[in-house]
Image (cartoon, rainbow, N blue to C red; front, top):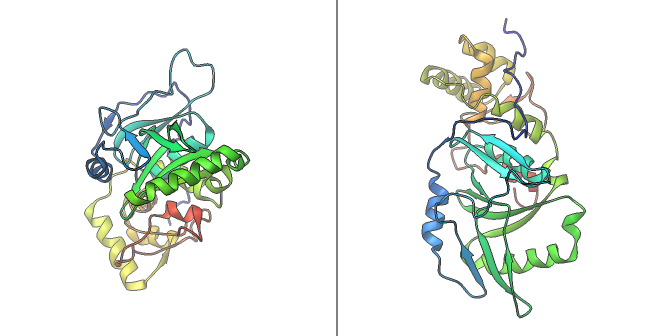
Length: 276
């Protein structure tokens, strides 16, 4: 029998005292996007990128800051930190880092745009890139998102970014905290560094291919590895197997292999049905 469910120590949260040895890896989707867009202004819009890319266009963490700031350790593309100014940004970082097939950069650029014959500037909170979809996110409390200027700015930027095959989204607290996505993301990120052997991958693939689907508990039992519970969760984190993350992960969660015809990274399901 496999005991259910010993977990590694919890994440340290948003404490700025967390020390992380930074060793980021390349993010090819973001790099290709930057190369495609370049620095030339388009009609009514200019995107100013940081000198180093990917990197932040501005700093939000400083010793003299009086407002609360958020530092989230991220693991999917090496070890790095995501810095934010609001809880909604912190939640976004956790969700994005837990989702396979997603690349993101916080404080990615400065947008200079024309609105009602005036020049305006805006620093979007996050740039999110997946295969086939790229969006700027502005993270707001749900009631804030209804403010006149935020709605009108979003409408204007969507219209300006559409010819560039990019989107702009105001992401709200209600969307980020829907279902069990955040709790599941926090759980899966604990297994980000857990090594998965080819033997474990093959065993999981063979069972799920034969059965079509399996519960998390049954797959864990069948793997027979020394740390099968960690193996199963690391497989989910790595996108090797999939499940419905809108409900809390437990031994009864149904797992299946990724769809061969391409799949939408689960983070977009936060905005279903319009964007799923």
